[in-house]
Image (cartoon, rainbow, N blue to C red; front, side, top):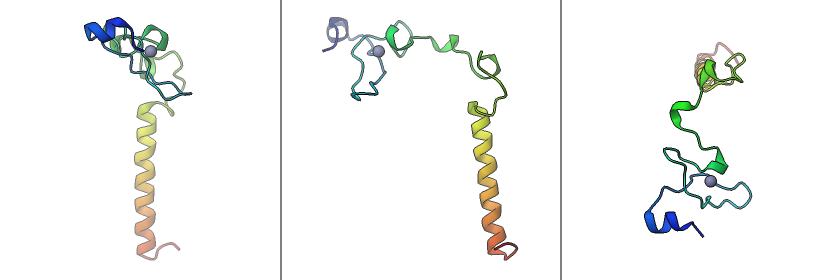
Length: 90
Ligand SMILES: [Zn+2]
């Protein structure tokens, strides 16, 4: 059951979901955040991304790196289909 602050004062609810039960968290979200203190409440402007993130090594697994890889794979697939249609490869 949600806390009274959510039920009476229409506070923002935490957006986290349990892996085990699949139910939403019933805690109120921290001020200016999407999640509660138990689910890593951080303001969007304080989240480090890309090269600023402390775990950044080479960027191949970053959002930009994954997007770049998908675009390259899409082009390779398209060229392979085209080459098969033209009879250049089997
Ligand atoms: Zn939560």
